[in-house]
Length: 136
Image (cartoon, rainbow, N blue to C red; front, side, top):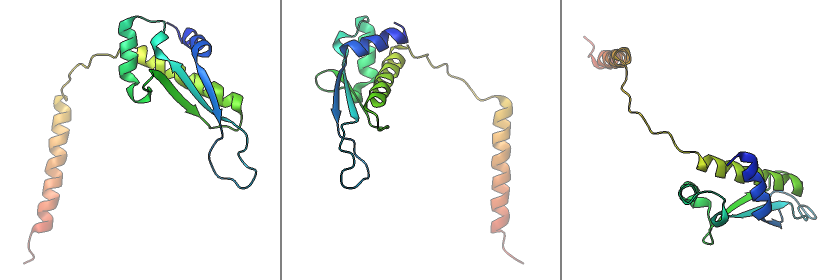
């Protein structure tokens, strides 16, 4: 599934709520509903069941009890820009969760790196030994 397909699916299936943005201000400030809350139902995500489980696992702390991905955006003063930012963020999250993670190949430090580490430790040790020598 490509990024553009995910974005189109989010625009079709996502539910958008608007509310007042927080932040500093005095009387008559922040009276417009520019904060955007985007709810994307992940149970209807057009991917295989295995991919859906991976998305649910990766985005676990952002998913509501109803199985919806919840994104808030209130960076700008424009409702339209906040909506676009929320859709883009949801698209990026889902797309990155769909990517299979590379398996970690265990590596060892090179012999030269081990020598450098031991050399630095020896220098530090000698520096501390010189500090503790009593005066004659």
